[in-house]
Image 1 (spheres, rainbow, N blue to C red):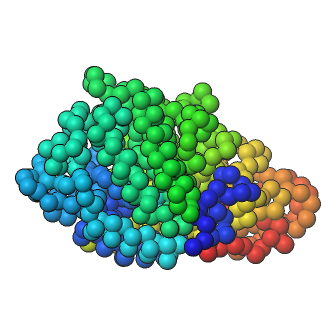
Image 2: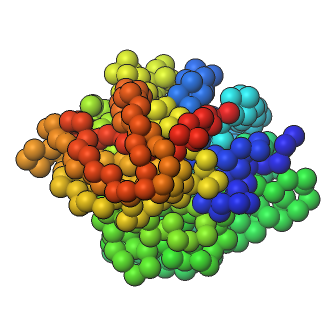
Image 3: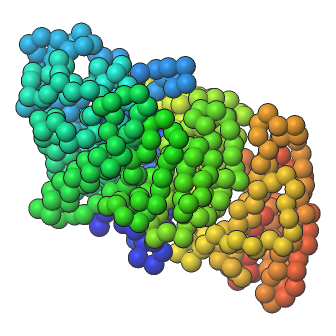
Length: 496
């Protein structure tokens, strides 16, 4: 086996996977591929590979419920379709009417399916973030959890749901430790794996006395990360750990400084939310499932975080994911391009993927899934180890667009221009053209425009350097990329 995916030694904002620099970018199903029995992950992974997706995620111990703001997904299986790490043996029934879980045994079906998924993803060169535990959000979701008293044959305390992500209850915490150790041991041989201890760790729920302080949740995360490291100390490989510091459950503040500078994370996952704070600045990254674009704030947050040593992944972006239409997908295309062109990684939940339609709908194939392929292939065509976000590169102010500039200065630069107007704002989506100006060093260059929707370049034209170049872009709707490269840099590197 090759060494597991790691932070690139020559660029800490990138990954190195099988000897190649890698940006993690994907439109992924909602993480239930292993635990949802009818889901044909073979079809999903084949399509993800064809779409040049470099990441997917999976949950090990979680079930969710559908709501008006959280549509059906692979994380919401029928009880008869749910596969837990623990076998359902009874006697007696859990809250969903099926046999209780035996926490003293491991379920071979779950771990066989986990290995099959990871093996196939490895064959396709797709990295998998294995999310071991998750927030449980509310009493209704907690009621389905195998670790809740009444759903198993005993050996855990009766606890309030907010305390699930704390060390307050020794028996429950011991079961969580055991699961972490088991999962890490099972998957240690894969080079395409990184871990997350807990998805969306939150605390300080208003009006609930048992809701833990943020530092209590972070202590719990830290202790379980130690279990990962202690387990791997007995094994041949060390895998990256992604995650984020605990944040307030009501969304009033999501910090990031502790994640980047103090905690154990190798990779920082930030869920784009309002009131996301970095270095004392508050960024409004959009309301959950709102169709808000918030492109300027997203760009500025990613650029601010680029100054940190750890990679940033804009994780599980849900700004418009429940809107399975052209408008919602366009929001996410623009957010994805902006994040990647500002040196971040990006993970969007594609709710068009369900059991039975593992490659999405005909429309999502034509739109967001193909658009994400264009982004991945375009981004990986750069000399990524040397490429950087370039602030101040453009010399002319933009009118309706937000610009994100990325590349190797003086050699190969992409200017991503996106209409920053919200979907309900007058003029949004109407054709526009922008004047751009930039200074090139002496030499011969060539320039072309690239369409994020078609994946096609315009004809390349020669540009003489040693001066400020001024031009007006061709008319475009929503977004456009202008690429300028030195003639000797015309050969590009694709995803391998």
